[in-house]
Length: 494
Image (cartoon, rainbow, N blue to C red; front, top):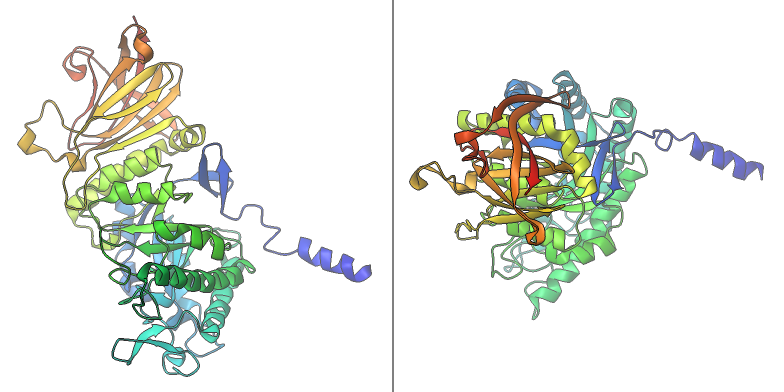
């Protein structure tokens, strides 16, 4: 009995279990949200280029630029080859300065564990792993030659990776458990097998081979995540590189955390909290919808194309508003040019001010997001988009009625609609126009008042009361192209 009591006391006093405020994922009403410091948190992020975080002096030149874009979170790689240069000997200096500098610039971090695989390859493994192909076996190409891809069936590689990841998580608990600068961790990066459907080669059934490969990858990643969570219970996810429409397994990183393999990843990787899409194709909305329809929650997009993407604003607002996204993050954020930086800064400033009502509305099902669906071939569906709240049905178009058609790009327009309760609503974004009808034909709906404004420390600050030309004589609420705006309005029926 004394032995059992001693074990129980040890568990209760564990530094991991005693930290009630560790960042976590939590079901809140209709949404799964990221909880940081006890409150829901919306990631307004950017992911660094692959090598940027490997050197402190190189990274130093970018922090101010990231601040100017109003990021609250940086997604940054940490590298197995730097952390464990010799087996069993750990050097966390590259992690320590990254955390110190993020704190100094008032930013959170999502760490990306570049270890056994990065974009299918094993280029970030330490030298002592790379040089021992007998202990850490490689896959072979069609010519029978070994590739720089460590086998997912290698228990030696899995255990070495897991040991290093556990050491990293234990170090994070020790140096960041109180500060909570690091709020999530990604295991590996864009896992998936190329150029075949799986390690067994093309086979007679590529789809079946891919599913078997997914089981191997998911089991491997789960062992790594499980080892890390024993040390520090941060949320852990994996990211997936997407395939083009109509291609076969092997023409994209096969077996990775993709929507059509979500069931396997859930089954084989219970220690991984969710899978996330990296999206570089124009068909952004369709890819997001595929993940959500596959039961993935929460939605998080760690690589939302690049900062120059013309659809960035629409994709962010649709993902957060329509699909309860916990965050958005363009890749190679430090390379944003002036125009992209200004667009991201405006978007993130608006979302930061609105974060509290956005997150509350996600949990209560009172939010919609609007952005045009675009096909893989870049064909834009400009049909009006619909939403319904209470006694009102809304129609939103991203073709601005007062701007020449050839002078606007509907892909760049998007909006959020939040029902505040009763007859009160918020409409925020750019290049979107909203009209309203009464549900069920019960009379007509009109705008009692419309006002522009901003949020300051979570409080609404009214600006101009809008009417006349600004509302088309009471016919619509309009967010002009080229500038972010927030308008609050009250409806009535007659």
